[in-house]
Image 1 (cartoon, rainbow, N blue to C red):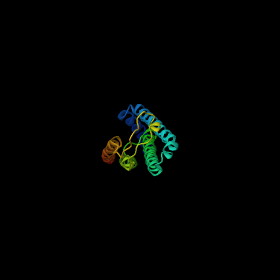
Image 2 (image 1 turned 90 degrees about the horizontal axis):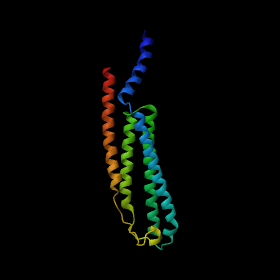
Image 3 (image 1 turned 90 degrees about the vertical axis):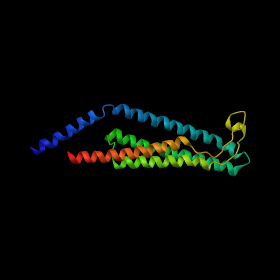
Length: 179
């Protein structure tokens, strides 16, 4: 009789999870699509930065150009790290249906920290004006240190989501303890 109860429980849990979140496949597919778009954006930025290397190194201000390239590469690495962490978050949700766990909360906190680092990495940019041919425009484009507000807002969003997911994890544990 105990065996019958233990075999019935997983069927009930699986059915309950489908009832709780019937559109999980749509959400996961959308998150995968966002990962693909983000990956394409990272690739385009990396190709653009790589294409600028010869022109920047021939400008006569090699130290400034090298600093620009290093900071640009740092931003690309931070963006790629964000993509890998977010993809691992999505894969965990998609494969294990694990939303509220300590690991997911930790991933969201690290995502917030990486995005905050990316936001402040722009402040390391040197101030200079590359030749007009580099920018592809008729007038020279000035490069100045800046705070990336998009990354900063994403960072705050990930920190807030980490708090929500931690609270959800605590509620889920309390609910399981009651049952």
